[in-house]
Length: 224
Image (cartoon, one colour):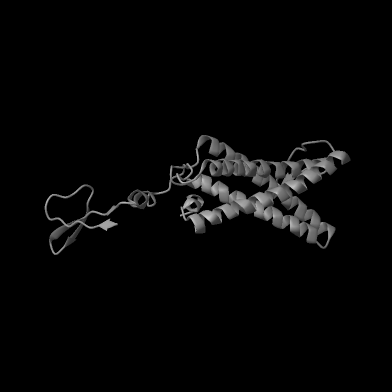
């Protein structure tokens, strides 16, 4: 419900003043249900998280990781479709470099999350929903760390030291070993599949909040 109060006497609390024809009009906007949300949604977004949304740093790290992981799966498909060994070798090196970048971004994101708490869950979420959401988020972190680390180990066990876009040579995590190579290949493959499955669940949860619950949770990580 929206109430508009006109007054030519003493101004009410926090008025919005307009001038027309030399007369002062004071408009006080009130909302019984959405007043607090009306104000907080229009607050400027800072670098740090607050109670209502993620800050610029958390959002930037989130979307950079999303882009990096999407590129990783795209590059994995391109490697399988490569028409020559030379092209495949170049794509593999790029795949490794993107993976190392994602690993660094995820580590930074975890550190930032530990020192900058995310916004609280909506009041309407039940206990089991909160536990499920928290478990899914940390599961994503575990998989996002395991995927590049297992790829790095797989490359080292195969006898190929990783590098970062041809600029920096990275140390091998393990010595060359055929047995370890086979193990790390399986770990890398299944971690990728599990990550895809959990990302799909995460996207479905976001769509539920956006179109079914309509509680605005998805906007907390949306830029703007």
